[in-house]
Image (tube, rainbow, N blue to C red):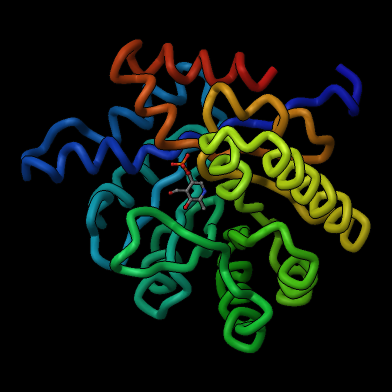
Amino acid sequence: MTETSKRPLLGVNIDHVATLRQARGVDYPSPLAAALLCEQAGADGITIHLREDRRHIQDADVYAIAKQLTTRLNLEMAATEEMLAIALEVQPYWVCLVPEKREELTTEGGLNVAAQVEWLTPYIKQLADAGTKVSLFIDPDDTQIQAAIDCGAHAIELHTGAYAECGLAKDTAAEAEELERIRNAVRFAKTQAPDLIVNAGHGLTRDNVGAIADIQDIYELNIGHALIADAVFVGLAEAVKRMKAAMQ
Ligand code: PXP
């Protein structure tokens, strides 16, 4: 496979398995079992978001999954002191810093890195010194990309939510514009910092993932909601395989 035909890796976000469990306050379905099944089905990594309100993933899930995963754990979290202490103890392969609002249904926008360079630079350094790589979830915006580079982030994850929403609204012109915005952001990031890893995610489905997977230099896509939704009908392993196929 040549460099130009390289496809992105698939990170599966399993938060919604925990959402289902929390809805009943029982101990099933198990996010750990789901993570291991996704790995067996071909996922290249597992993403979990430990939210401050613990609405889905719980602390015990983080420790259990970190211990048993054979691929790479990507721990999404807000850049708080509480989360830093947990991440330093768990030492996931990746931490992805995200903005967090208690009233939101899901992560709504990218992190405003440019406004928090002084806070984020030593925060990222502490994680890096402990051996964890840090990614920042940002909008496809040059100012935010440059700020992420300035903070010493190892990776950025470009927010594809606006692109996904245009597709849902069947606004093809706006969808093409958002796609171009993401392409330009990847190009800018790789020009400014060739070693920076560029990931993407949010709102990706089997229908809209192809165009994003086609963008050269995107390393990994993190996908949760649509994949877990597919799993309701076809099972988790098949849903992972179908998403990987859609990315080819
Ligand atoms: N990446 C980040 C940083 C996220 O916060 C989320 C949602 O938790 C995702 C990817 C996955 O988004 P979706 O569930 O819409 O696929």
